Image (cartoon, rainbow, N blue to C red):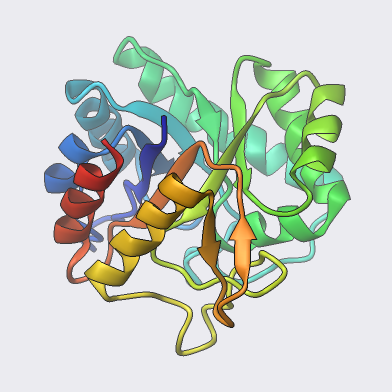
Length: 243
């Protein structure tokens, strides 16, 4: 079964991002920001409380320490730093989970850290190392692509299971990577097109790249973003397609 996931809990102080309260009832997995690219202590607490209210599985959404750039800028970090920032952010979110009688079930790195993890095996291993040292029951969500088996093999060395993700509202390059957000056509805003892509993935096992190449992808979960103008309508529509 394909489950819907969404990046959430990304407000910060008086600055509000997304419509978490309205979207949460329609998803299965909530990727909650942990304070490095967005969120704060109050936001994390409220986000965990909201997720528990709707029985939504909670994932940590850690990033580089980049509040100004919303975690979308790659940073040069040592592998020790990568492991440490992952541990720091999982621990922060998990403290709120424990306070509400729940727990962090998986990790999905955010933004540039997610992209760097998929490009650099050493960063991927550093993140696995952090998760394994914290709790091997926590899974790691990664971008589904042509090299899934290699990622599975490496993750098994650390005793960590993977969750394979496909993006409903992002264009893909022919090699299975995401079109950069720096490009004007990176985001798909047409609701019907997004729904057709996911229906094709369900029925045929593939979606089309930006150049109409078929990409056959293993999929455990589909991601949609909560910060668009039509985010709520899109989530509701996809929920009907998936479930």
